[in-house]
Length: 139
Image 1 (cartoon, rainbow, N blue to C red):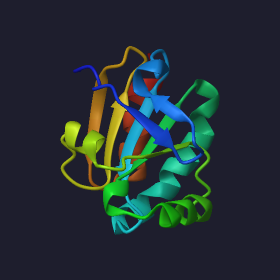
Image 2: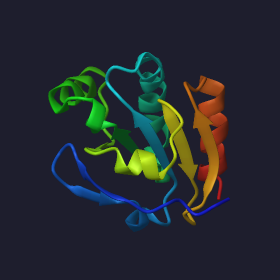
Image 3: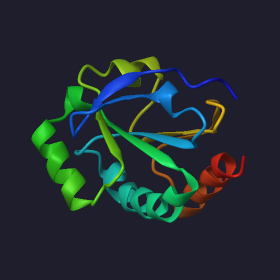
Image 4: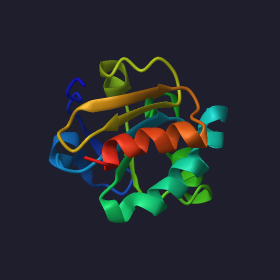
């Protein structure tokens, strides 16, 4: 129930995204990397759920830990997995560190008021993702 720490990061497409600007929308913040095997297994679930819920206002901020990754690899991963949501680049891992991420993937579900209502560390099952999304889409 704590407020989500604000951040501002460059998106892969060159835009800048600030979390606090998304207040009023349900947001899934997912920390990942191209070399992370569980991230590769989880991403299709996130892509499918985003497609299913974007009409309800769902925003996904997929934050690549670019400090330990390569932007060209990120671009290939995004294309391969058909990620149509916002992909952000944490070039110095300052956001991941500030959010105290304990590993990859790490997912934070933020309700419309800007509060973190669910945290999933590690690869999510389809049921865990669905349950956490219900918490932020219902209010």
